[in-house]
View 1: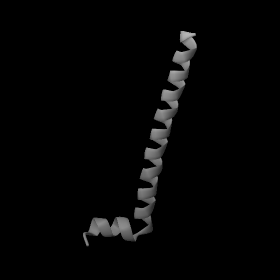
View 2: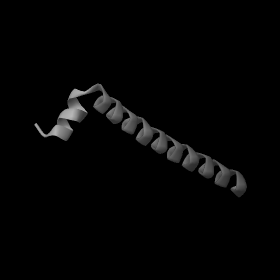
View 3: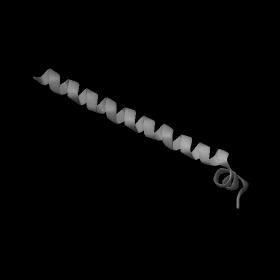
Length: 48
């Protein structure tokens, strides 16, 4: 197995890096969707 893959998949630090990456991507997607929803709500309020 390639040494980098071994480091990522076999060591706790690798799993921490994978988990941290997933959390960061999840937070960015959540914030983007939240902002889009708020902008849409503000546009609906302005149209009334």
